[in-house]
Image (cartoon, rainbow, N blue to C red; front, side):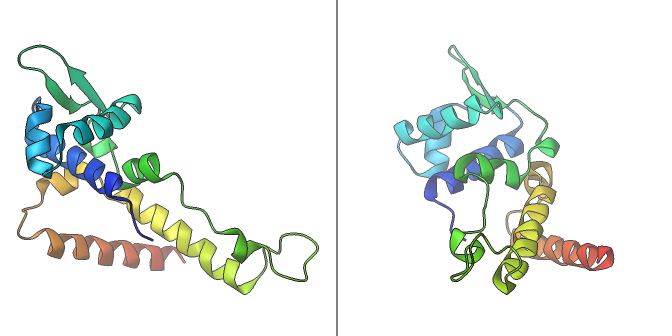
Length: 156
């Protein structure tokens, strides 16, 4: 799976707002992301329309989170920007079948994988990400992955 650049910027915007805990001007977001203010406004518009962030007008205006960072998951932002992950038709429609073959080996492999990825992304909330030290971020994310894998194994 490869996320588009807009999704990466949206994740970074939500992360930055969760970490800053204040109203952040679009110019500051643009500088942080190293992108044009126009591009920043496009992405913040999508996040605002979805109710994740709120716009503040005036001299001290900008953006802030509209929800507690603990209630915004990576899944929320990714599915907003990318749409829900789905299993491609080529894995569901098997040649020589008169209708979709949802019992194919590929489908049986891919469907739990999709469910696992969705489940994992729902556990990554922006309060957790904002609390991580930037230098230790990779280590902590890997630790979260290991914990989640262990939990999934226990459920099986």
